Length: 66
Image (tube, rainbow, N blue to C red; front, side, top):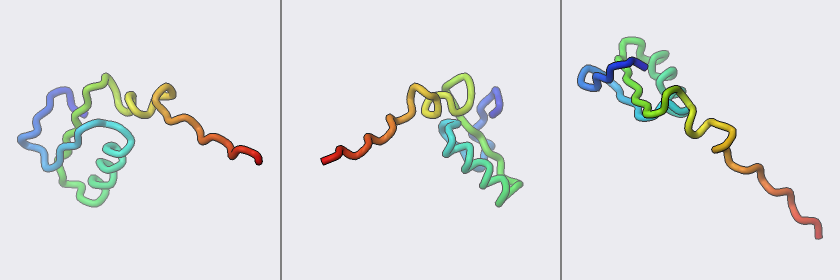
């Protein structure tokens, strides 16, 4: 991610730097290295909102014995 966001010159703009956008950015650069990517993130770093331990879904409940 760059400090200054210039989406006017980007070929692809990804909103959010979570696991999905970051993975997509890697795949796009592997497939089309010439693409200019811009990732916009509001958090101070990558994958901090949905990938943190406090935001992960609860584990599945074990089946109830009958």
